Length: 275
Length: 345
Image 1 (cartoon, rainbow over the protein chains, first blue to last red):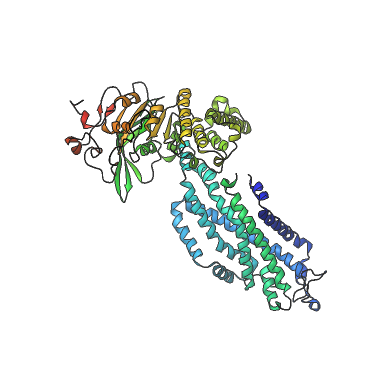
Image 2: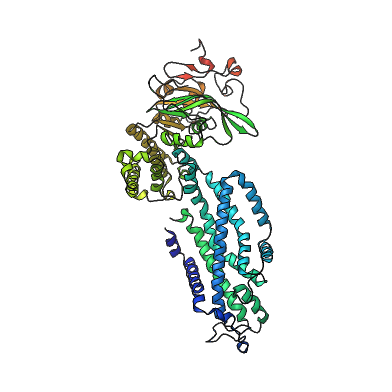
């Protein structure tokens, strides 16, 4: 059964994929549908209004329409977390493959990843973000620093186990050259578990990013981001709980959908399950 | 120990005085001791012995696939007259690609799980486009050449009796049974028309009925394609069925080599005899299986003299003192045993 077939059969994965697709479309369309000025459009007379027909998610403490803010944040959060995982994967896969294939680089690279992995994720990201300064770009760089060693180690382990597999020996007898063996056989086999991990990691990165910006390492109050929306709404949690509920729900739904996709990806990238 | 190739004819495989050591626990231990083998074109040589006798290690050395902890300390291995030892990886790759095919014990792990059967076999043509020369592969465009390669793949899958080969070519390895996978591996080996096919315990991982099918397939291919075969096995039945000649290995040395008929009729070396007696007879009235007492000696601590003397029923003084040297008994029959030393035959 093809990967698409597997997707069709699993209702949960379908639901996850559907949800994520809607979120992606909304996120992509948001900047063109909503004027960016809404962020600076302060109406104190209409602040902290509960949800109604005009303001679906209510308004925040500046009187801004929360629905528009959450949608604009969707664009930022999704594109940032996807980009972070993409960059971390590329760096990790390249360095991991080097470590796996070039014995001289193995130890140095692995000790470097040890250094990164020995510091707890959040603490490391906080330290880097604090040094670089407060912005979404710097936060993303910090998260790439946190995530690449995971991919690097995973890829290295995969390469090491794959290159010792009997079929690689068989290729040698067949007269297949070293480079062809590496690029056509070893790397494609090694990379699958790494790629299969990526969707679930986008969800994790998203939560981590929201957490960091919630505690003040994110962009300022004029850049809508789910974590910082929750942070600024927290002061009014009893008066206006929607300020926390809607961005929180957005984070929850996104990471849920990504986890469902992640489960599917893990199965879909395993050729043994394609039966 | 098999006879020397006849004049004017280059042996397909010649192993001479091959000694290999393994690094075990920080020291070098002799695992192969002065191994001599000759396989002539079109011939099938069965290399038999217990686990640990060095038969697989010999095969790996021939293919240039010795593990990292092994080193060749003496000897020479020639494939169609070309030396295998001491080549660079790239040279070795070229030589192997041209003249050698290796069929391994467990077919599943010798196929790339991500590529379809057809794509894997067709890769042979990408690595060695000269295989398509006869069909004018050099004059064809990319697409047409691919089609030609695919046709040849399907044709070879049919040759190894895979039903519905066109469909199987599009399947992944895990979709096939072990026997089918082994057929695929055989097709992959044959498509290159290698001078020598090494088959290392190829039926061990298969069911008995499938074993029989694979063996009869090999016999048929040998007859139709004139395949030269080095057959590694511990099963005397397989040797009787497929091989022309046989070399019996014990603890890193060839103890007896001869043609299959004379070995089965009158094996000389006590170990070879004991091996044959240990084969269960379907028409015999014995109710117990004969076995050889004791076990193969650890190579880390071999006994002095003949390595078999501790288990040998006919042991006498010289066996403890000296390693027996091979003695020639008639045409292409040799045995390494003190019983057949000078004047004793």
